[in-house]
Image (tube, rainbow, N blue to C red; front, side, top):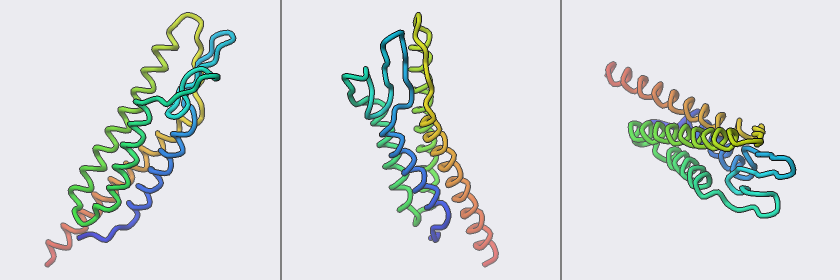
Length: 149
């Protein structure tokens, strides 16, 4: 059994960043007089906004896995696996957003404006990686302690 330390804080920060990211548009697409928002809870034209099902599902999945990961401290190997899966899902979400930006950005006349909110999932993934690194450090310390017994 491992006493949770810094990785809990890293995971909690990652959850908070993903939840905040859900409320803001990641991209705006502009064509002359039209502005289209692309985000989790705000997608579509400025007058008719709707929820983006792919993005909100990925954000909820990343947040839930990170929250669950906080409470898996009794099984360090499982905690590391869940954290690694969470990192992969976060990277997949970033790839999906980039694909959407390049598909719409390559259309005639559309311009893509990246919002600063796009840094939030990147920071979230960085904190997930820091948590995974802390877990691997704990695993190493446990191995060393077991070896000395």
